[in-house]
Image (cartoon, rainbow, N blue to C red; front, side, top):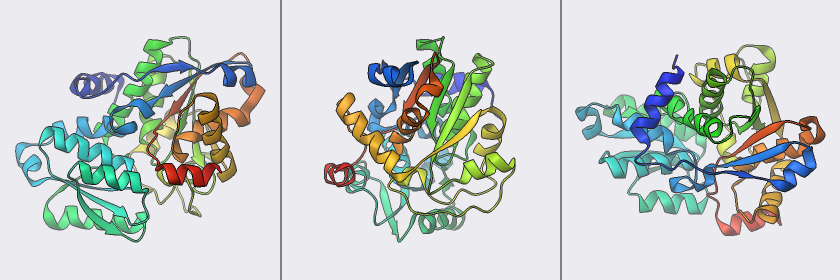
Length: 316
C-alpha cells in the first residue's frame, strides 16, 4: 500500500514533465449549491487529461532492460495517449490496444505520438489482448489504475488541491478504474483527516458503486456508456479497490442524460469543451444541489479529449 510519502516522491519524479493544473472557482455551481465550488482542471494537463501523471512515474521506475523492450496497455483513449506521450519523452516503445470505435481525436493523438496501435472490437478484448502480449512478448503492462506508481502519481492531484485551497472539505472525482479517486482519497485524507471524497461512476457501469455498497467485490452488470473512460470491466483484484474501500466517503452515479447535461453546462458556463467522462463530477454536483450548502468543494474535471463532431452529436 502506498503512502503520502510515495505521492510526494511521485510529484518530485514527474514535476518537470507535468503541469500543476488550475483550481478555478465556479460561480454558477457555487450559486446552485450554496457552497463554494472550484473546478480542478485536469483537462488542461499535458495531452488534455490527468492520464500522463501515472505513466511518467511508472516508466521512470523501469529497469534499462524493461525500457528497451517496451510497455503495453489497453485503453479507451486517454491512458494510451498519456502513456505514449510519456514513452515518447522518455524513449520507451509503447504498444496500445484500443477498440476500433474509440474517439477519432484520441486515435489521431495516439498516431501523432508514435504509439504502436493494436485494434480490438471492444475494450474488454483490448484488455485481454494486452495481458497476453505482455506475457508472450516480455513487455511491461502498464495499467491505467491497478499500479502503485500510477495511483501514487494520481494522488498528486489531491496534493495540489489542498495546497491551493487548504479549506476544501469535499473532493468529487470521476471514477473509471479507480486509480484517480484511490490516489486522491488516500493523499487527501492523509493530509487532512476528515475531508470527504466522493467518487462518481457512469450509472451504466456501476462497478465500484456495487462493491462499495456490498463492502466486497462481486459480479456487476455492465452496459455501454457515452463516457467510455468510465465504462467497462474492472478486475476484482484491482489495486485501486482497497484505497477506495478505505478512503472514499461515498460513491455516486451519473445517468447518461446527467453526463450530457454536465458537458452542456460546462461549455455554456465555463466555455470549456470536456469529454463525457470528465462531466461525471459536475453532473453529481448539480444533482446534489443544496445538499452541498456551506461546503467547500473541489470537482475534478478529468479530461477534454473529444472530437468536435462527437461533442456536437452528444450535446445536441
